[in-house]
Length: 113
Image (tube, rainbow, N blue to C red; front, top):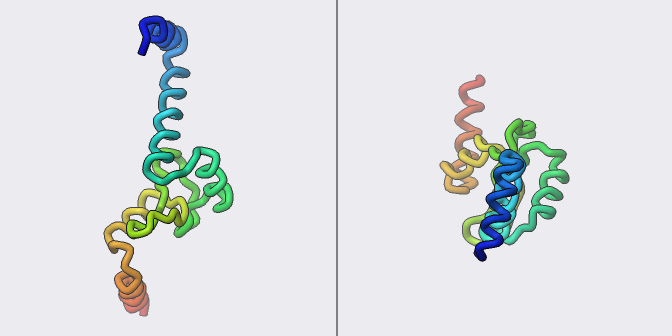
């Protein structure tokens, strides 16, 4: 980064520290989505809007935007949807294995009898 760019960034950071942090987070988010999932921020927002801003599995609204996770197939890389933190962990711990999740449902239903 050129010296004048650093000076400009320093001045902006000093004038509006919260705005500077927010813009920096947005820039990092854009880069992360593009690198990891091949998504633009607009595509991510569209995906979340198509889910009515709810988790694709439990349908709960998520209060903190940082708790949303892009769910994807680890084999093909295909994006499936946006999940809350808990649902993302659930799929991760089940290693995306449908039989494991089906067995969990059977187990839960037995406990309700």
